[in-house]
Length: 308
Image (cartoon, rainbow, N blue to C red; front, side, top):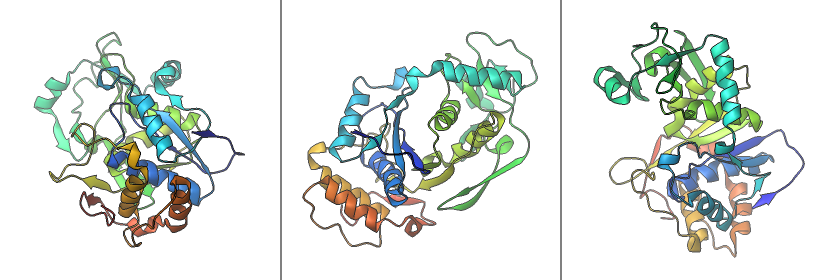
């Protein structure tokens, strides 16, 4: 549901990928960012990160919007679709190329898997093509020449986070070998375009933040404040996700879903009372929400919610 209010200094967002329906983990991420916008009297925007057609599920984008509406979320302005923004990403890539930040890479994932070291964020690019001065042509990726310096930022739940990109990720991709824009670049360009002041999202994206800040600086774009919420882990120890077969939300039980998700985000608050509708739930939840209660938490067990 789209609503319009006068502009506020706080602007948050939720940016799902249409690879399947919303599940409990994505509801928790949406709830955290939405509660922050309510707590701080700001705006909450929606962006559909539909950059990867091979991974998308037909109809998932509309299904996600219907599910958010069923759970009482209200957003400001129209939904942004990344599939409509190719020219903005190309402009950013041209800017980075002109400034000497990018180089062409011919390495495949299979090739890199054989030689790359691993960090918490995944494979670390070993610099194979960095000094080859390859021509930018179809079938080659574009990577950022990451500086050999430490980059730090403040996470609102975890404090100061330090990263050495050369060690933690290596030169990372901004345009894939198939020509599609990579997530790291698109999210930076779009956060700036939407004037996002605060990013509240899952801790699975914590390792991406330093790369995104590096791009913000290279493109002379503002850096939002960041808060990375704990992840819900399934019984197998992996985060709940569409890739891991997380069950989609049943919109007929929106209030129960909301109460369960809030049980994770507010572990010190008694179980939610009975509500007549989602508007009543959000009024109550926004009055109870205290993100500082999550300081230091990294994960939730799937069975840990008091309302489960």
